Image 1 (cartoon, rainbow, N blue to C red):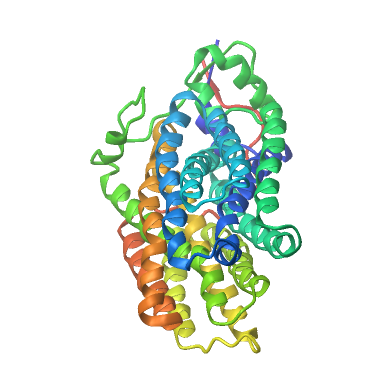
Image 2 (cartoon, helix red, strand yellow):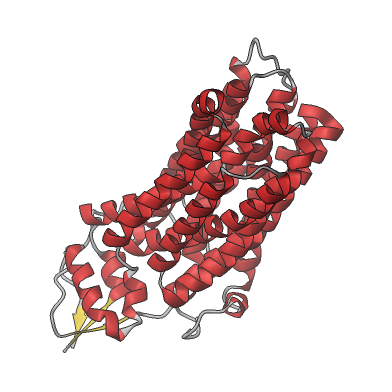
Length: 456
């Protein structure tokens, strides 16, 4: 019988077309996650007029979604480590899809709040498992790029949500927007349930599923023998974990990195959702039409897609420490420039350009943070590590609407953009705490031979 180290096979193996297809399937779930997450902020200007309520009346409804995402991120990560990343991811997609459809029938802010919380539970569970799956399908040198390209689909989904809102709400109403936002993820979940495999690392720890793992590795191009026994090399200094728990994240090996990651996610999710939740309402309040206000958020999300892709490439060339700290510092500078700008609906070219650049930096730091978290933890606690970091970050996400609303009420648009700068400065400090940053990986070849390394 031959022994095959699954971690070594994947880390040193080729980056095949089948693996790229798996990343694409995982990424599609996050596109729809991003769409559903930004439907309500784009609908708020219309709901204010239709229901006759002030912007502040929707603060709790906006905050309830991120609160649900906090719970979902924590639950989703643990479920992913114990029952499988695939089950947790697709279960999350089905949850937020069904609840989003239900939102199209609400007639009160209280019911909107409850359903947004429940949809948030599903949304929160999707991201850590998508990031984990993406990291465990690919070789080590492609891992930051694959994870970032998966999570970059959040702003891509946000871009689609803003465009859908600008096209659907004026002619068909906000209810149809939520119907579309729920039906499409249900269809995708049904398709992916048939074609998306479980994480090979997860399968390696379950002997009864080794035939499934053998089939998967062969599809990835590895010559795995029939009489195989799978093992995984442990991370030096890490204890063996049979059932992942939050306590494993605070062992001496991981405690400092966990603290830095949690604070990074906290402040970065806060600043991103200060933007996502309030840009349309802020622009509408200074004279922009609803479609024009939604397109301000569109520019933030387009910038996020471009910035995150650039960030992923830079991480491979420079490593995550230099890349992420540099982008955070640039975001502070750009936010202060925006704080000094005049907002004029008749002359918004420069403003939209700054939304593109600054939104790109904010989202780039946020999306690459998932790759950083996946790099910090070994596979046995990876979903728990990523999920709890995101869950803690969701506290900042919950507070974002209140922090952003206070800054806007007290200081107007200048105070609002200054809050972006302050929060990104805190992200910069938090990222500097993390020791186990992603090293530069450029210059590596296309991969090792497809034959799995084995020992007798």
